[in-house]
Image 1 (spheres, helix red, strand yellow):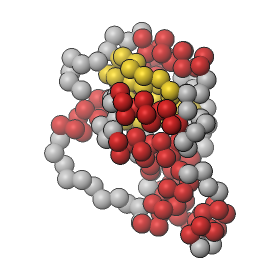
Image 2 (cartoon, rainbow, N blue to C red):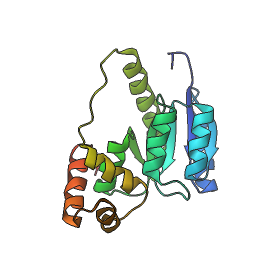
Image 3 (cartoon, rainbow, N blue to C red):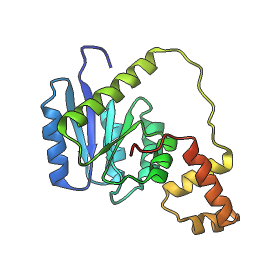
Length: 189
């Protein structure tokens, strides 16, 4: 994104009224353009790949593709797109999982329009400055097994189902969850 370019955003939420409200809030900012909307995880992925936005505003709970899978696939298919999670939840463990999966920020559904616009601008600016730097790719702080656990969480599996799938104890799954969370930033209180 150049300094004069508009920030291109996709809004993904399964509630039409909420999407309409976010679109209206973003329309008040001359430097932000909504280039697509989606009502489920699969259409969020498809719309993001097609529109190649700077920012995807992604609801946590939508039908279709689970949110962790959506984040992972968006970042793989549209690596310059940054994901802002839009949620009514303050679950710190979920926040850690979403950040570990690649989300850039969170915003509460009770936020003001100014807070929404500020979050979009901050994430887009951070992404822009990151792209201009030439840093070597960082290695994941998660082990292969922790990435497997995170992937299965993204598929919507419970701790019990993950333990069965990977032939490990539930306690081991919980320890992996704790480490995944410890390596991401928790949701703000």
